[in-house]
Image (cartoon, rainbow, N blue to C red):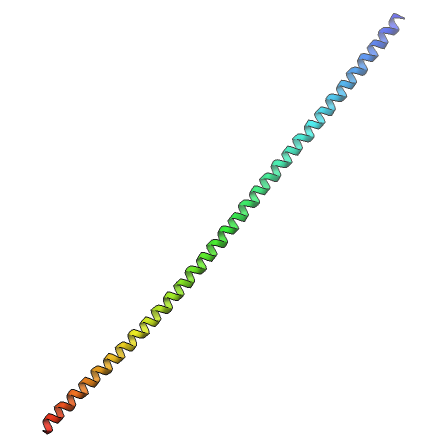
Length: 117
């Protein structure tokens, strides 16, 4: 009878220890799942940060490209203005040369008139 009770007590202790082991195993499994979820969250956050950085680089490149386009347009406008100025200078030089020719002809005509006189 005593041996039987001792066996029952031992069996109850064994069942209690098995239940505690099962609880511990469940707690470990939950902790592992939470750690895995945290790791996934870190990976997702890193990927999002990388994507944001890439988008920022694309945005910076787009801004730089627009600035380059603006600078090129300004350069073309300045070239056009330089060409207009050069054309105006050429016209002014031609007019001055024509005036000089007219003065020379007038002087020659006056000289000829004086000689004829």
